[in-house]
Structure formats: C-alpha cells, structure tokens
Image 1: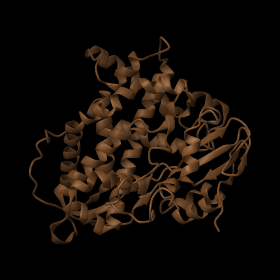
Image 2: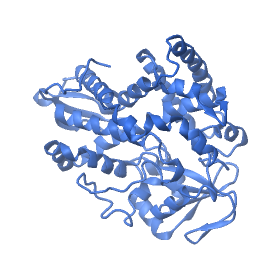
Image 3: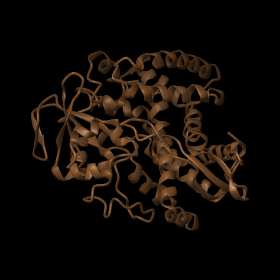
Image 4: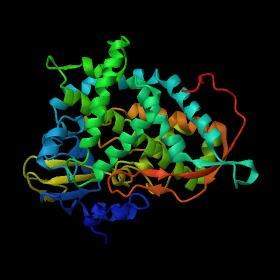
Length: 423
C-alpha cells in the first residue's frame, strides 16, 4: 500500500494526479504526509466528505492561521499573503470577496458570452494561421494546443475585463509563469520581484484608466481602486495582491483545465466524437472535464484547536492537505469515478474547491470559457490527434500541461453570429 508521504513528491505527479494512490489512501482515512519546513505536521485526506467538512468550517479549519501551503508558514510571507482572499477567514473574507462578487454572478457572466466567443474565434484563427503543415498527412496542420489556444484565451478575457491593453499580454503571461514558479519555491520571498514589477505596472494602469475616464466603469482594476471595506479604501498592498490574484487565478487554472480537457478527449476519442456528433452535451462535458482534471491538487487548512478528522487526531496548529482530485474521484460521490464519461449526469467535483466560503469566485467565467472553447474547436476542426508527448510542470500542487502537440484539420465553417473582428 502506498504512503501519504508520497504525495509530497512531485515526481509522483509526473503523469498527472496519482489516482491509484489516492484510492488507497482514501480507504485508510486521513494520514500523516510529513512535516512542513518549520516542522508543522501535515495530514492528508483524500475523502470528499472530509474535504467538504473542512472547507465548510473555517472556525475550526483556518486559512488565516498558518496559510494554505505547506511551505508558506514562514512569518514574513504569511503576513503579506494574509491580504489575499485565499488566506482570509470570515468575517474579513466575506467583506473583501464582495468587492468583485458582482462581476462574477451568473447574470454578469452571461453577458460576457459575445466577448468570450469573439476572443476564442480570434485565437483559433491565429492558431490555424500559425500551425505548420509540414509532415502532416492529408493536408492537416500541426501546432501546440497548450501554448497556441489554452494560454491566450483566458489571458485575453482577463485583460479585457481588467481594461488592460492587448499589447501587454506577453507581460501578463510572463508574470503568470513566474508567480506559478514562486508557488513551487521553498523560498518565502520568491514572488517578491514579480510583485514589485506588477506594482509599478498597476500604478501606471490606474493612472491611464483614470485619464481615460474609466472611473465608475466595469473595469475590475477600477472596481478595486473604488472599493471600500468598513468605510476605508483598499491599501496599495491590498489592491496589488487582488490584482495579482486575478492575473494568476483568473488565468492559470482555466488554461490548465482547457489543456487537460483536450488531452482527456484525445485519450478517449470515442468521447471526442460523441461531443462532435452531439454538441448539446458540451456543457455537461465541461463538468466531467472539471471532475476528471481538477488542476489544483490541494490547499491546506490549519486546525485552530485540538480535534480529529475521521478518527485521525490533529492538534492545534497542524495542517490538513485537502486533495481535490481525490475528492472528485471518490466513489462515494460519483459512480464509476475512474471512467471519463462526457454523458455523466450531474458530475460532482471539487475543481473549484470543497465548497464553503472559498468556493472559486470565477467558477462561472471558467465554465463559460471552457464551453465556448470546445464548442468552437469541435465546430471548426475535423480530426484531432496527439502529435507528441505532453509536457507537464513538475509539481504536486498544480496539474499543469505546458505543451500539448496536436495535429488537426481545419474544416470550412460558417461564421458564428456572435463572431466579431479579432481581439
């Protein structure tokens, strides 16, 4: 039987989350994985019911106390990170979440569909133009789905929502990559250089948007500038960290899910062809993709008092690692969970967290982007197949595909009524 300590080894995730190990550990209940850099005991759980129980009880299982990463319990980094929503507990979390909540409610997200479809169309147009025909039989094309499609779509959507110029997209992409690297670093100040660069850029953007008269607009940047909590404006640090969270979380998880979802469909060609024949199933397929991929592997919570979790004693100050992909494949919540099935009804998953106050704020937008992307891809592209080995980030926290070589044929397609000029 596998050991919970294996979950701390990034190489165990080289081919994606280790489902068999998760299954073994789930049967045995919560178990010690090891200790963090400052000696904090780490306990892992792979049970959907445990993950949900911990996520919905912030008084007992805190994001604020000790942070949400095994290596983020160093004091300096923690004090800075406590300005992030991810690290807050109620009532502070509730007050700050409201700042952007209206931008992501269902009615607001639904209004974004024309803009998202316009961006997806422009990205696919560019991917087809840039794709190489060399060596592909039957006049097909070859490209990298991860870099050519999955990366630019959420990044362009985010830039549009924040009122940022399209010319700055390469800079945003660079910051996303460096923030991701800093999250895997054992050094508590690894992300500082990025934040310094972003601080200067953000000040310039705030000034530019004010000069354009964007005060009171729907720009997420101006929403942060104009927001108040308990009658006080946000500090520069709070605005910067909100901005950084939007740049990273609003982009990274969606692009990784898009790439992982395409890989899942290519590895299950019968499911791909089923969606092509019945595109009305794509919304349900998105939920199955979210269940199957769950690209954030874990977050931590810290016990605020001596307690237990499914019979495992946990002392005050110790951390529980919540393994979301394991929860999404728990047979207690999904029948035949190791089968990828785009016809699955009501696929239950933890791709957006285990519920409670920290349920992903941008879940609706992510679903919209994924749905439209797969609708347009299946409408425009004929045969799609792998053209090489996918490349993954070496990490036990993020299930991220950095390269997904594909071959595809571009079929004649009618212009969608919501397609517009390239973004």
